Image (cartoon, rainbow, N blue to C red; front, side, top):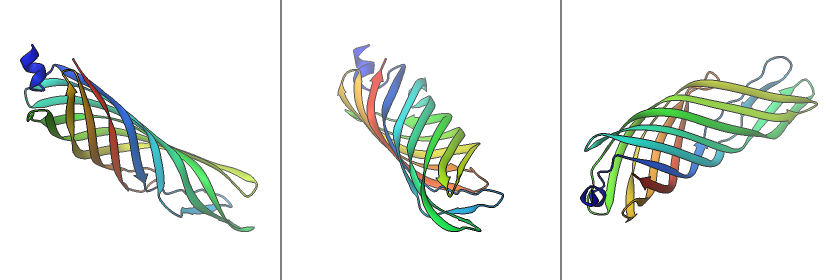
Length: 184
């Protein structure tokens, strides 16, 4: 049993950590208001990811994450234009394969995750509240490295390319996470 832990070949693990997403958000509204994104949203949040070993080098992964922040948006109407910081949050629910190999205390890995993204945006423009929500397909491709601290605990650094298709637009977002892996 200890040799499996030392080589990183455990039955599964649970990861929890900090997440940063640079989100390319597009906002539009009907009626008398029209709007367009004036920048990227820096979303700070969390990510949780359990995995189970399928083969010595392959794991099945579930991944849930959330990011929260603001994005500047210019709203236009017959009253003029107004730049407003609107609150936004992005939640992802994905699953897929992760391939890895253990080299001493290090376990580099690559993964491809597929699933659903949900984003909501809310703010006040002129005298009206503006809010939108959308859910759509999402995928993340990336990788990282686990550094084993002790037999059942590792530190993970991970980077992914996250693509979503929210609000009738494609978003190409880099995502960086870091946190603790508990192995069992």
